[in-house]
Length: 184
Image (cartoon, rainbow, N blue to C red; front, top):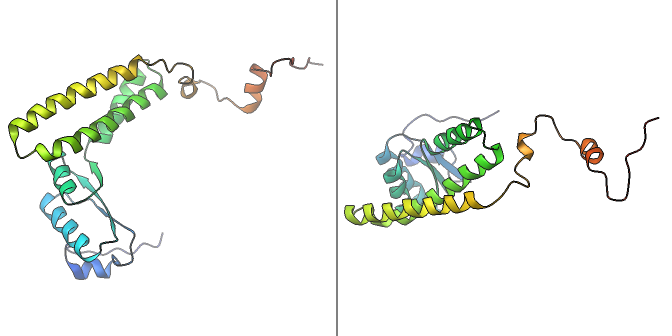
């Protein structure tokens, strides 16, 4: 693929310059040590202000730190895998794949909003816990409301056992006022 790979301490300015950070559009950080991630974000923002930073966070507390540092694109470990597993479980239990996927996407959207809401409260344990309980209750209400909406009209499309093509759709649903041609 022609990618250059640089080995070394990514928080060092000379390594970032050698790797081309001054002309890069995105820096994706997938380092396990939160302290190193925070140092790298600070260094990159100071020396490469136009560089878009995306980062993986080990947990919500790490994500809150990244929010404080001005990182907008945060990918929390295990969240996507857990939601994908939940979608697979719902599908295996008989829920339509599209409905299960939509529920997973809704959960992630609500959870992301909750993370942003909780971040300012993380240094005050009682406020954090109180707000976390409110956010959980809100998410449960939003998800219940989403389940109450009847999406059945279009949610079957992903669950068809045979592919639907324009020809089969036209044959199965001829335009009004016309008849399928007789064989023969």
